Structure formats: structure tokens, C-alpha cells
Length: 190
Ligand code: ADP
Image (tube, rainbow, N blue to C red; front, side):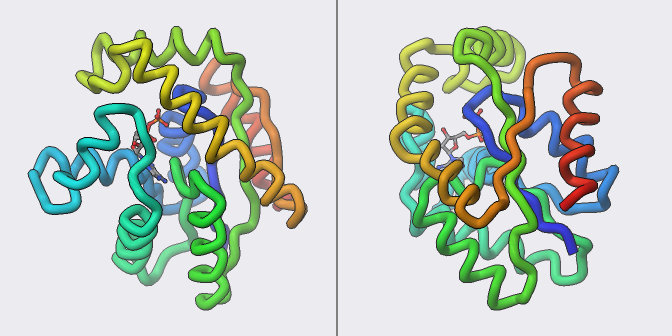
């Protein structure tokens, strides 16, 4: 079983690559951002809770996010593995994920981190905001706040996985196909 974390700042291409990789490796793609947006659309209790945080570009609290993630995993009992996109985003999320997956004897095989310079990220997010309808992609101050959240809470995960020899950086600049190929070279060796 291959459980993989796809990592990188907002706009680095995690969602795009996860959609391609899930077919190549026969994995279930779980995007915490997508699950939150689905809940907001359906006006569920979870959605109402997450909305205020997401609207400002802040992270949703850990307990809410972790419980949601576990519930998503439990929906798929018989699978080859998961590709986690947008989770974990804090050290306590990473620890909770390790405990949860170790209990199942299916630990994370590795984290693939997409590396993209910040200027290009802002450009990509603003472009996405033109067509996606995502309000958090349409406002430079919200985008900057997401980077700040990433730098202060999420970037430490590089160390967390590196200490377990599970961190693999990949150049995230180039065509979608080229980047997929770079990621596959890494996953194939896990
Ligand atoms: P991006 O990575 O491009 O910012 P996502 O769709 O992954 O977009 O996430 C959008 C928003 O959803 C985040 O800004 C945050 O508010 C919330 N979110 C997603 N994943 C998490 C998480 N693991 N922990 C806390 N909040 C999250």
C-alpha cells in the first residue's frame, strides 16, 4: 500500500498533480480543501465552521480538520492507498496522521514537496481566481495571508518528514507532464 503526502505552498500544483497521480498509482485522492468547499456548498455544520477561516485565508482548526480527514479515510476501507493533498498542514496534524496510519499498519511512504518560487505562485493563484470562483484566490491580501500561514505553521513539516527520511523535494516549475514525470521518478523509488 502506498500512502503519499503531496506537499507545497498554495498554488504549487498539488491538486492538479494529485488528479493525474491517483490514476497512475490507483490511489484515492483526498483534498482537505475540496472536502471543506463541498461542505460549504452544502451548508453543513462543518462547512459553516470552516467558512470563516477559509474566507480569510486562515487554517481551519486542527481538531476539526483531523476528525474530517479520519472520516474521509474510513470511507475507503479497501484501497491501494491514499494521496493526501493539503493535509497535513501543521505538526499536530502530521503527528495525528502518523498515529492513525500506524494503527492501521499503513504508514506514510513519503512526502513529495512541489517547489515553486513565490512570485509564480501569486500569479498562478490570481489566474485560478479568474475562473474558479474561489474568493480566496481573488484577493492579494488573502493570498499573502495563506503564504504567511504556510511559512509559520506548515513549512516545519519539511523537517518533520526529513527526520524520518521521507521528504522528497521536486521542482514544481514546468509543464504539468514534466512535473508528473519528476514526481513519478520519486514515487517509484519509495
Ligand atoms: P491552497 O493550498 O491552494 O490554498 P486548498 O484548497 O488546499 O488551497 O485549501 C484552501 C483552504 O482550506 C486553506 O486556506 C485552509 O483555510 C483550508 N484548509 C485546507 N486544508 C487544511 C488543513 N489541513 N488544515 C487547516 N485548514 C485547511
